[in-house]
Image 1 (cartoon, rainbow, N blue to C red):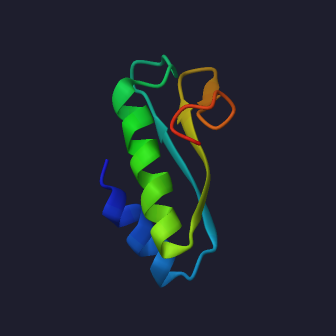
Image 2 (cartoon, rainbow, N blue to C red):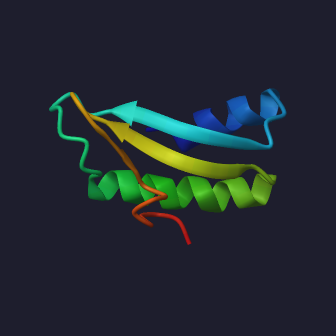
Length: 75
């Protein structure tokens, strides 16, 4: 996942905040360690650009996980 892409598009659109979402093709929405690390990086980069990352959602076949709700990657 490229952090710069998400934030670049948010800056172009003058977004004050973003919600990031992606799916896990395996169907298991459990966040991976990489998902948590990327979330942490996006939150920190967003702070520098004054863009709030409201949540990072991971979708599976029949469910989803909110990393913010689980306090993964968010302060």
